[in-house]
Each structure stands twice: as structure tokens, then as C-alpha cells.
Image (cartoon, rainbow, N blue to C red; front, side, top):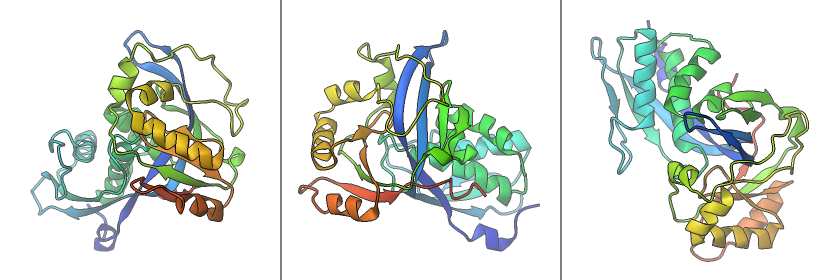
Length: 286
């Protein structure tokens, strides 16, 4: 059984995330880094649409493949196949992606897309797996996928898959996000010998907005002068700015939309970015 036709015709949002801080607190024996971070969702992102394949056709087809990304490696296609296999689904799907989030930007674009595929097809294919099961499937695809399925702003630990909800701590806020013209490969940053891996652990209950830093930022800034330039400009406007994830995007927080837009209007020629509101939860959470 699949969902009614009306559900197939809607667009499914895949929002951006930012890391309000990101500490590397250790490393596991298998090489995975142990992290502490706070994820916050933004009202800016990609949109996915799905069309069921004909009966008996179990193919997963990307109608809008990403340039330079082999279809078999695309996270959206991999997410659909993983769910198909986990639930024994024989229905195929065509996936259309309206891509707004930059690749290699640290905003979780690919992970968010994959999570939205799992959330959407869980409904459209009438599977109805619980969130925890979807998160397990998502973790096989990438460490950032589970937070988008969890769907609430959270303090995350481990490799980024253990969550403590902190929505009540986060005030309403708007963000100016700058998108430097570079793509940062996350794996390269985590392999760097310059990366600090011993930041002291903090308790999720002790964290408050404004605390912490991004341990990956110094490594990225050293490798990518454009990231450094964008950070410097943003700090000159707002007083404080940080990099999200492993970069390249950087952001500053404002208490209101007007302040964020005023800063956006001052962007130098050639510098790109967007203004977005911080969300209380993922738009598909409820």
C-alpha cells in the first residue's frame, strides 16, 4: 500500500542546520571523532518531491542528479535504497531535488536531503517505522543524518548521534549565513594533524547560548583564505561570527530580522549569503 495521491504531490522540506558550537573531545579506536555540538535548524533549505514508479518497477531514479556526484553515491538515492531494503518495499520512486544549500558548506545539505527522503518515503510507502529506527538507518548514511530525523534542536554527543533537546534554551534568532565560493571536504579536515582533538567535555546541562567554539574552524581558515575573509568581514559587522560544521559557510546571529537584513545589505560585491530564521523544530517533526 502507498499513500494517497495528494501526499505524493506535495513538496518535502530539507532545512539547513548550523552548529552553534563544535568541539572535538576525543577519538574512538575505529577512527571516528567524538564530538559535542548544538544543532539548530534554519528556515532555508532544499525541497524534494517524489513520484511513484509503475507497479512492479522498484527502481530508484534521480530526476535531478547533482553535477559531479555519481547517482549510486548520491545520498538521496542511497537513503531510498536503504529504506527500501530495510522495510522490504518493492515500490520504486523518482526523486526530484530543488537544491538551494551549497555542497561542502557545513549546513548539512546532503544529510538533510537524505533524512527527508527517509521521512517522506516512510509515509509515502506506508511503512511507518518509528523515528529511532529511521535514525539507525540514517546513521549508516552519515553522522549528521539522525539529527534531521530527530527533528528538534539539540545538544549532540558521540559521533553526533546522541541528543539532549535544548529548545527551551534557544531564544528566537535570525542568522546571516555567508557562503564562501569553496567546497570543504569534511574528511580532509578531520584527517588534519592540526586539528585539536582534546577539548574538555562539557555537560549538556551546563551549556548556554554563546558558549563554546568550533575546533574545525582554525584548520579550515588556514586551508581556505576565502573562509577567513568571509569570517573577518562578518565579525566586523556583527562583532561575533562562527563557522558551521566543517565549513565553508559562516554565520552571525541577530536578535531580529531587521538587523540581519541590514547586515546582508552591506555585503561587498561578490560575497554571497542569505538571511534565515532559527526554527524551533524541523518542519517535518510533527
